[in-house]
Image (cartoon, rainbow, N blue to C red; front, side):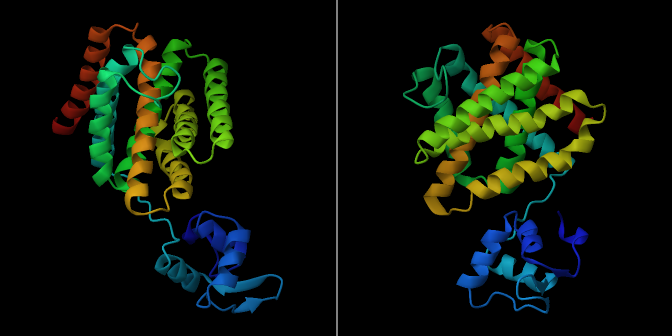
Length: 275
């Protein structure tokens, strides 16, 4: 829920909505931080706070998500970057690299792509660049899945559900490996993106998809320094691999056909921007 839809006085749960977290987390902040806003009403059990004061406090402590909806130009840039990511990962996918996930020792075909993505994510901003890129990769994955499954919604949903469950199970078995959580996030974003397959006005869902993707990233990206760079890299690599992994069979697994298709998609985006 956005701040504009909340009352001027908010309870702990509503402050949690502002921060994309739950009431328990906010109650914990209230106990830990002496500068947490003082109640202006309510009861001891359910205190009320000035919304403006709560927003200011969250912002000062880096707890208020700052996610803007990408402009059409920024979204076009994200689409082009997504196509490029898939394009550089595709040789490794076709060579049998990352058969079940991107983790593990990649052959030569995969190493160059991984190096390119790692360099990009070192300087990319999580919410202005990585978020729209992950969502565009999710759209590519969903579109390819629909092609492979003859636009059978039940089959697409079942594939994504199984993929997400498997990735979540692996991540739960070894929480120390963020790459496994990144696989789960990539599958979850593709599930969000797949909703556009079944509606007429796809753009109407975009703002909602940005917010839902942002919530997922917000929970995983509140780190700094080198760890933040690693997490961005893992997320982009997982989403890029998933898109390439699904797109390859959708286009018959033939390198020339795949490359021509990706080139045509990129050219279409560029032509629309310059036309």
